[in-house]
Image 1 (cartoon, rainbow, N blue to C red):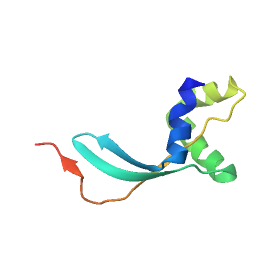
Image 2 (cartoon, rainbow, N blue to C red; image 1 turned 135 degrees about the horizontal axis):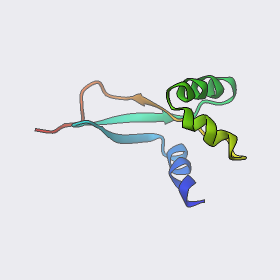
Image 3 (tube, one colour; image 1 turned 90 degrees about the vertical axis):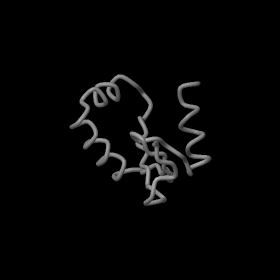
Image 4 (cartoon, rainbow, N blue to C red; image 1 turned 180 degrees about the vertical axis):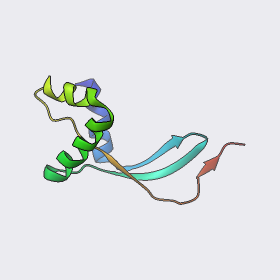
Length: 79
């Protein structure tokens, strides 16, 4: 269960700060459901086939989390 705590925390607190390269930015997480989730998951499996294999080997539905950037300027830029 500990491996799922990040997911439950993200759903409860969807505004996040993340680092991409030398940028730190703000984003909002959302979890698509139903057909939207399945369509996005299929695209992910095309790029990372191991995800499809992992889904076949588990009873739980692997979630898809989308991050929407909230700011266009980096919150912090490394110098």
